[in-house]
View 1 (spheres, each protein chain N blue to C red):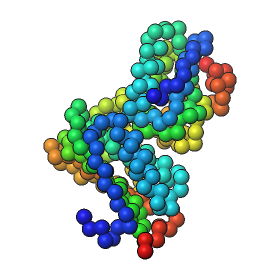
View 2 (cartoon, each protein chain N blue to C red):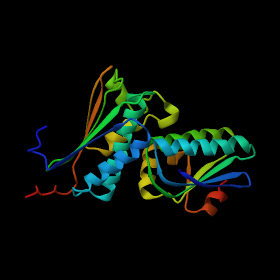
View 3 (tube, helix red, strand yellow):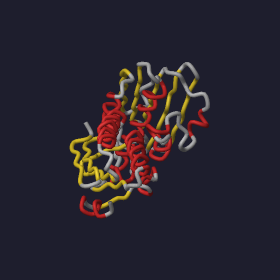
View 4 (cartoon, rainbow over the protein chains, first blue to last red):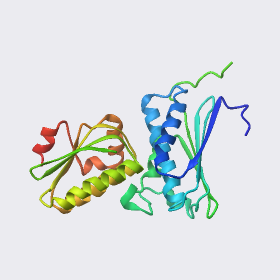
Length: 150
Length: 113
C-alpha cells in the first residue's frame, strides 16, 4: 500500500460475526471524526459502514464465518472506506444496486445499498462469484479537508 | 439488548427500545416482541418508545416493517414516539413514516390507537 498520498489509514480484520458490525461502524465513525465532517455526515458514514459490513456478514459469507476487512483512509479531500470479504461474491452487481433488491426481504428490506448510495458521495463495487466482494465508499466534508500532519 | 421495557396497555403493546438498532439488536427485539404478540392475542396496536434509540440501519428497519405487517394483519396501528432526528431521517428515507405513525408523546400515540 502506498501511504505517501494518505494522511492516515487504519485496517481492521475480524470474523464475520454479527456482533462485530457495531464495532466496525463505531471505529470508522471515530476515525472519520478526524476530518471536518458534520455530525450528520458522521451519522451517515456510520449507517453506510453498518450496511456494508452487514452485507458482508449476511450475504458474503451467508452461514459461514469468514474474514471481513475494513480499511478506512483519510485523504486530503475525502474519506475512503473499503469493506472486503472473500465470500460468495455477487453474480449481478447492477441488479444488486437496484432499490429494494434483496435475497431476504423480511430481514433488511433490500435497502442496504440504497442507504450506502444515498449517504456516500461515491460507491464502487468489485465482485467475483466465488472470490468475494470489495465495496469502496468515498465521502468528502462539505467544508475544507484537514491539513496534512507536519 | 434493544428492548428495555414492555407494557400492555389495553389492546396496545408498548415497547421501549434503547441503544443502536442493528443486525444483532433488531433480532433480539424481534424475538421479544413476537413472543408477546403470539402470547397476547388481544393486542392489536404496537407503540415504540424510540427516545433512547441513537442509531438504526436497514436491519432495524426490517424488524419494524415485519412487526408492522403483523399488526396490520390484526387490523391495528403501529406508532412511534420520541424519534431522534438521526433515526427520523432513516425512517423517512425508507418510507416507514408513511405507514408508521410518528407521535410526540406516549399519550398522543395512545390517542391514535
